[in-house]
Image (cartoon, rainbow, N blue to C red; front, side, top):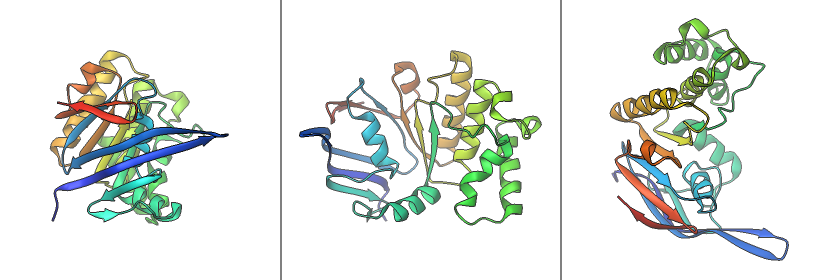
Length: 226
């Protein structure tokens, strides 16, 4: 079996804006191996967000192919993609994307609801994950009662709810101070050592250095990697 978990093969993504076509991705080729820690860098408008949408199965190519574990998912319906995302990929966002009316525990249980996990198992798993990120004493707090760093840690716990193979972190330290950002990155490194594939999108070269490989995007293409 291939050790590649995600593969973009000559992927183009074209958006139509009136009579104008904008190519956000231009024949992008990218392979991510299982258990790899990859950072994606590039200036605004380089295609990073669109590439993330492809890697995270949030969108499909206009042209080209998108593979997840050797399965071509380029033409799947949104409902099929949603099921794959729920099982295989955990998301961590810069804005945390927590629901303010829910407690930390309830936020972490959310992804499990969509996978049909029983309520008892959801609660048990969420408690274990919040313990893992050292927030056991904050499980009944709502996001507005948590610091930025605590909210991001809740977001990390939520990303692990369905035990996904891939963690996709989009600017996860963007709204954090440097000390709290380091805690988040160190936790991602720990998850990688435990077998998770990590894809990190960042503007911060110091953050990117924690990855095993850095991919540089420009104008919808890979301009280099190291």
